Length: 71
Image (cartoon, one colour):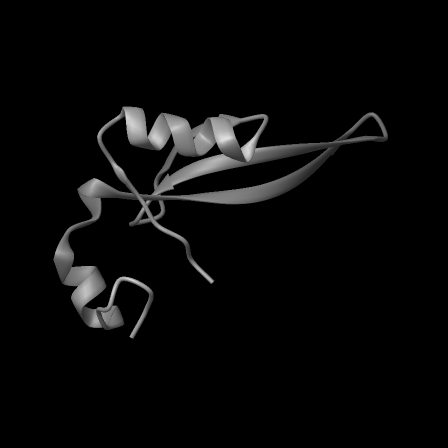
């Protein structure tokens, strides 16, 4: 069971369109490290990228999606 109280199979069958998660990604450009917080649909489709986790979560909620934590 995950934090939503569903099994992984239920998660897949629930429908990916309404769920989104944030993944912190570290990119190196010209020897300067920058953090990027990417927003993904539950099926793994990249939706957007932001410079802070708070902005990423706010965008998820403003878009009518449900933010989920994956651990």
